[in-house]
Amino acid sequence: MSNKEEKKNIVVKFGLNETDTGRDAVQVALLTTRIIGLTEHLKANKKDYSTKRGLLKLVGRRKRLLSYIERRDVKRYRELIAELNLRK
Image (cartoon, rainbow, N blue to C red; front, side, top):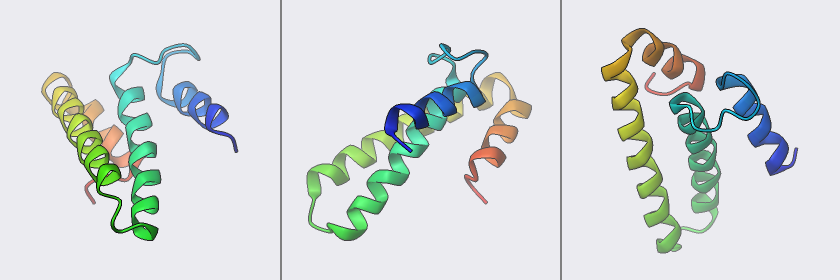
């Protein structure tokens, strides 16, 4: 699956329509897929420190978005966490 197709599928799944890329749940889902990809890259390239820094920045951004969602709507936060398999 190409990157564009994967992004479109995530936007359709978590957004209200196929162009709803600004919704907080869509942003968290997109960040999660990028984080997973970078994690796999770092498993093979342990000394890639610039990628590691970028990964940590993405994790921080996702954490801030998740705390925003949690403050706004706890039920939606819990559903999103369960759907993305975060915090088991």
